[in-house]
Image (tube, rainbow, N blue to C red; front, side, top):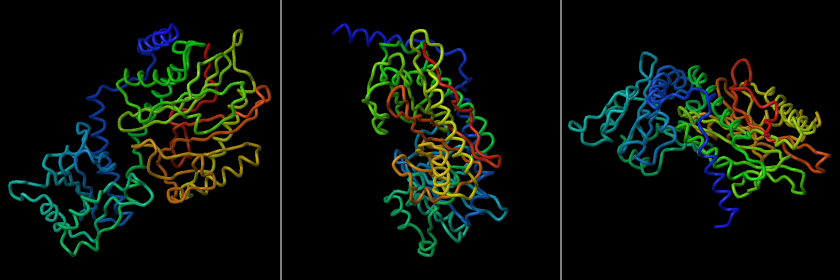
Length: 442
């Protein structure tokens, strides 16, 4: 083993041995997390589902999954202690005459407190006939299934389960099968106030981890590589008993001849040693209480005798904030993502910016269900989910970049920002603020 390899390994081990941060937002113990998740599931079924099913004129919503091949939506409804479905799990939501929704589980085991266990295997050995009994009880005008052309999240009914359902279902209901897409998407994208409060804490945790990683406590200038730092983020998340939903990426822009490329800037193989004068970028997200975060921020590595970042980088960051402000000012309930994208780009360009906007919903999934507002390689609009209208009480990763020519470096750089925000009747607001100053590394 060479001395260089020994140095890198020693440095990496030292990074992993750092103690837990004293200023970390309180993170709930596992039992308390489970209690919160189960409470939210019960509250969402009782308060969110009845008006949504009425709004979309759906009498019955049927979710079917087999163990280890779970429907993405069904997974959001399982108890916190269930890490997968059991055997074949069938969930039924049926509107009742009182204006509410009854939740049934046609499954071999009781599924938490939300669902009434509605299959007695001793009395009815056939699970599908037990489902038919429930359907006949409610006599629904339609039965919604999770099938969708535009959202993978709402397309969770697999062919095998669909064929089993059609084989068992009485013929009079076969022509009553419809797509649950509008209901499924709103179930995923809508957030209750209690969830929003916890979302603020989740984003605060993510911000604190980024600040810790972008510090001289972790980065040894001239030694630490971008991959070292990316793996430090992974290890730090595990130390805090959290999870990431994607591998972090760390990239560098500096005074060299290399031009910006969107794909390679997020490449895990794009490894460089961090040096003084570098502009660092991180893309990082965690999962906490079934909610996901997604953040991109920048840091500057101070040169000797520097106490602050150069004005040209400070101003570049301000241009990114300017683009954020333009973009979020165009949010309005009922507008499609493509409309907001077009209006925002036009205004930003008119103000002298060079924008690229690629904002996505966030929630139970990192790239979540809801309105897509551009993709980095689709700046003229996105078919399907870009045509979907914005709804209030939904969360988004405000993800975008602005290109800025840096005369001192004789090149164009990108200020790549991503901050999680909430959209309600007051407008768009950031769940834990946003980056308005570069993080500084001594």
